[in-house]
Amino acid sequence: MEANNKLILVLLIYVLPHIIFSSATSASAKEYDTKAYVDSWCRTTLYPNLCVRSLSRYVRSRAMQNPRDLARFALKASLYRAKYTKAFLLKEVTKLERVRPQYYALVHDCLTQMRDSVNQLSLAIAELDRVNRRGGKSQVNLEWHINNLQTWTSTALTDAETCVSQFPGRRMSKLKATIKGKVKNVEETTSNALAFIEHYAAARYRARRP
Image (cartoon, rainbow, N blue to C red):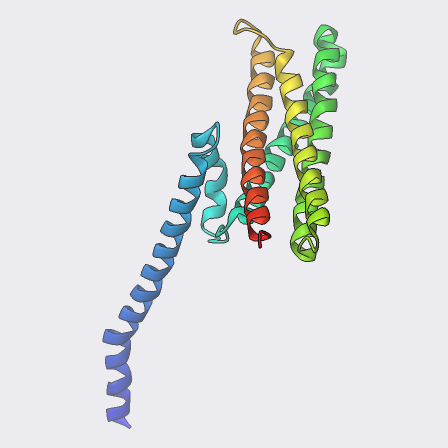
């Protein structure tokens, strides 16, 4: 009995740490591979640094292994920013109606555009999940799904661009600068998401070639 206890103790002291270290090393390697994969694709976008930052929160999941994963997580990152910006604008527009009515119409227009962006990006994510489940059974069916993805994401991008265009130049109030910065972030993350959708579409079309 004592010999067995000693054997167990030896295993715990010498063998178990190696197993734990090996598992941790394997996990770190996978995370590094995912990060390298994301970094390489982000370099193909218009805003590579923002791309890396916005997707970094998803790297640990090690779920980004192909163009579809990249497109989905990029859309999720864009939707997250759009929802955050919509909530900020909603709070501000409520105050402005009473305190600074001269800004109310401008901010209300941006709020309307951000609401539409949230809706369009939500539709795009649902469509991407749908085409993955159904597999785009025919070329026509696949093209229809891809067109929906591109249209809804492009519309969300246009919404953000329209709002940003209402704040021209650099000299502006702190509130305007804050709004412009937040919406610009939505615009840029959505632009990156659209780039990944294009990569995903190209990969799907290549896979269907005889």
